[in-house]
Length: 250
Image 1 (cartoon, rainbow, N blue to C red):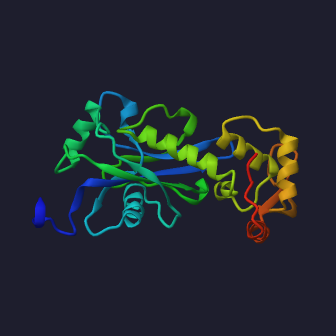
Image 2 (cartoon, rainbow, N blue to C red; image 1 turned 135 degrees about the horizontal axis):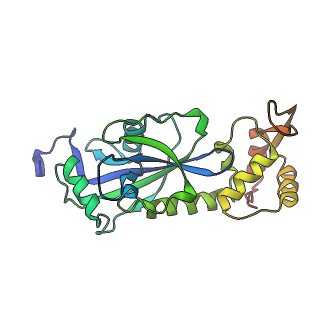
Image 3 (cartoon, one colour; image 1 turned 180 degrees about the vertical axis):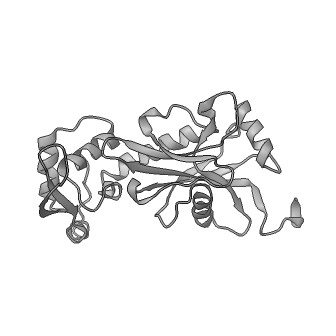
């Protein structure tokens, strides 16, 4: 349908949303990807970020939440916009063009996408694939070398945004459970910055910030010496920001 005959409940063929969802399993950063499930000649080309066209009556935020839930079953998370991607050659792989022909009424339409990202606790969400997603699974960030369309580029932009934002806000706590060890927190920051961080300096700074609460309890059921457990102190963090502090990088 074109022109004035288009209905509000129709999908807009020229605008989409894509979602970069980061998680952390205490060892590495992972990204939630969907598998398109068709034999496209290259298994790597099956994987994509959760994304789809928006409806005519939706704003971008509404579309991002809807699409993420429709494809992966994940909902009720915070999403932040990364940016817009509109290269005319976004769809230059033959496998992508063939796949679009199987699901889109206007597969040759130029699509501009708004990308979003979020940080979630992996254990809080069990992805369940729906719609055209045949699988929804957590893939280690370090193993992702190619994705459908320009999704690899979108992923890189979201990753850089994460690196920059964690320097001014301690958003990494969104990836951790309520209780965690200093070693787990240290490992998280190393994974985000993709480089080793001196353990002593890291602990000295994080404790000086006074944004952790010592829970006076230790790990249980671990095959090594139990470590002290902490939790994020939101009240102390707010006091810091009210005083203009904005250097949480390492």
